[in-house]
Image 1 (cartoon, rainbow, N blue to C red):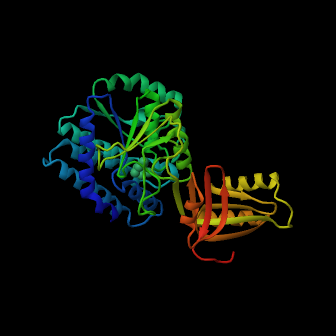
Image 2: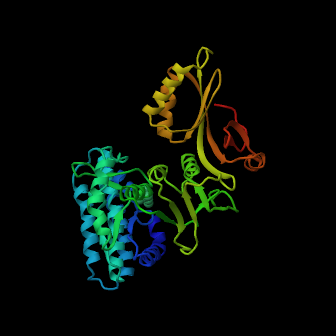
Image 3: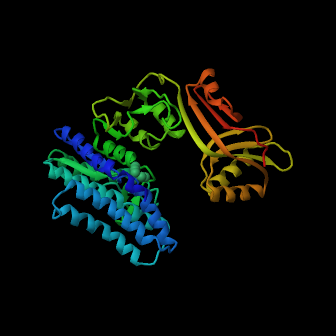
Length: 421
Ligand code: ASP
Ligand code: MG
């Protein structure tokens, strides 16, 4: 199974994390940790298998447990260390769920998937104690209060701020606090999650409620780069980034920062540092109130796009009424528009290719409109573009849609030309 591949890396991961924390243990420090390796993906698979009644349920669960026990064994030579019992008791919560009949997917998802963060934080907290760092494991669910929108919990800022201020501030003076990213709790004490990759957002919530001096996100990249190294051989590190540019980059799909992370920090003027745990002494990127535009153009690639053109059946103009109806349909099927362009006779959008959603969306739009679509497209966004950067990404491509604002250019394109279906 995939998550096994990274065990060695993860063990080193725990040791790296511990080194970074112990180097800063003299400061007031709240550490927000997400699940290890590909655990969240595996727990998602487990939840789906349980819902679909598949035989693979136990096998997936055993793999997840095995992955964590192997890490524990490498960290704690003494098999009687309390960490072993603690982790096994945490996993028992999943056993209890699996014994019952499945109901309400989103609710069960949060109860199962949150276990990834509960075990990773317990492991790190035990390991820190083992190497002599005075720390306390803190249950984020006692602080991050949300509504009951499972899988996408909306934070109740007043309650969260009140609880964090009253209880965490005094504790922070005494020891390092270790808590979970990504998870929260409803007022009835049910676990919620804040949306995939939500740990950065958790850190921003805690930071804003506790009026932190700064937030540092430790990644396996040296900081914010001007493109994902997956697409370009040569990328450049952006040393300073304004909140505004960071929000724009996250919005267009730069995966290094979760889109919701910046706002709470910007509102409280808290700088965000993005650094690499592989090179912990390097400075990385700082995001803050910076008056300069990006020093280099930045590129964001999204593949597997569908370009959809929506046209009134009778060749009438696209007017506000059509647009509002189209957006109602998009909202109904939870399809996020990555870019859009309006002309007299058609409205075009580029969206992620999620087969199930797109099929339903096209069927719904087709009731009123003529719908043309083209799959297998790429969407490239260039922030601070110029002609040279456009030429660079469009070489050997056919551009089907181009949207430019003063600082941002978005292009939907494809390798070779294909007629609309
Ligand atoms: N573990 C969660 C996820 O993978 C949250 C995070 O990593 O930020 O989505
Ligand atoms: Mg994760």
